[in-house]
Image (cartoon, rainbow, N blue to C red; front, side, top):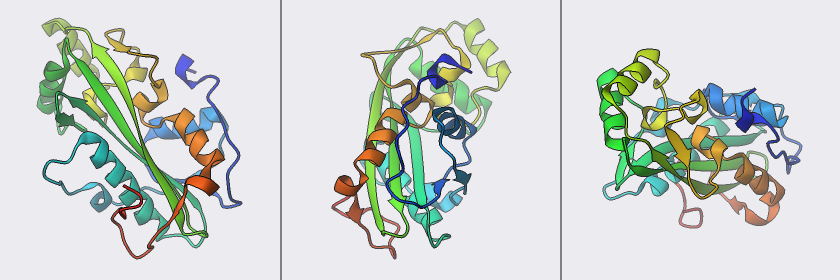
Length: 222
């Protein structure tokens, strides 16, 4: 078990509904398992993570996608406590999601090389029976060392960049990535476990009633 998987916070669920992870990410599943949660997996449709909004910030985008993923999965169940998340990297206003291929991954890493950047994760907790949810965003500042051609090529050869925001995985043991200001390690991996526990603990006071017929965030949830 990686060090970041140890001593993760765990909170009691706010309802008696089964916990459902609206993601096929093995990293998010590993985090939940390491914290001791029992859960099922139901992957959201690709359409839930699509569509751009002109001028939208990275934080606003991951908030919107997390909500859309939770809404998509919630439609499939009569009861369930859905947790959905979306993660991107952002450097100087440029949003860096998952790479399309090796060339795209190389371009992303060259953009991040030697620069400070942020990783944002939107997280949504949605109670199907209560028709309520809470949405939040956690940001973590990072610094990437300047990558030599050999370092870059070596990492690309591992294929560990596949499916990862910004084309890198903090959990892959890359000593050329440092978290700044005591930021959340689990957030960089894809699910901010500290904030997730807080949202569960305070769900009753934080959650808003939602329009179950809409897949867009309401003004109250943005």
